[in-house]
Image 1: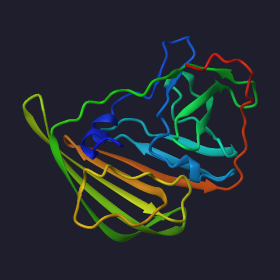
Image 2: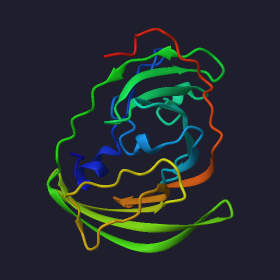
Image 3: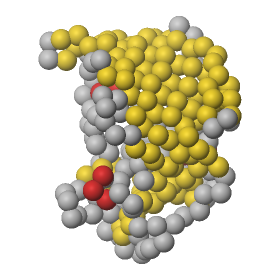
Image 4: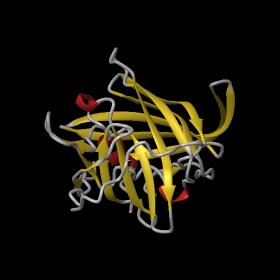
Length: 237
């Protein structure tokens, strides 16, 4: 069972990687949980830009499906790389049945990857609160391409340290985009349930006076692994 949307909003602030400066990073086994990796086809890739708001610097990340078989999907990405290790990538082998990461390698593109530690999924306590959701058709343009989307808007109200907090999250999903979004928890009270299976074109999150956006800026079908896998089993739990 996936966590509630209230919990998912809180979990946005949790790190999905770990590692002190000068040490190899680590990755949580559920780091790829937002995507239905089993639906990914080798070669598909998407690139996003994150604007954290508040004047903070923007950053980008790429997800690419570089190989797949009946049991494992291989995703190469720089999303979970710590800022101190910019310029490196991770190669993650996830199970097709549960999406959990089984093998993980890290290094510079073109080189041999080093097996890294895979951490258990973080336990996120359910926050008391409610979440309602609505769905509407919309069109979002990216790189001169207009995507027909299903716009999902979730409004979550929760109590933190005795204070009430309201957060709004808008997600635009399109069948034409790879890396299918897995969707929200069944605990969302939908006015009308989502019906579109597809990837994310844009996400907007507003909470505490801060607006964060994630925008699709590029995509393609020619992804290839730039990191070589090693036989080292150091990344296994």
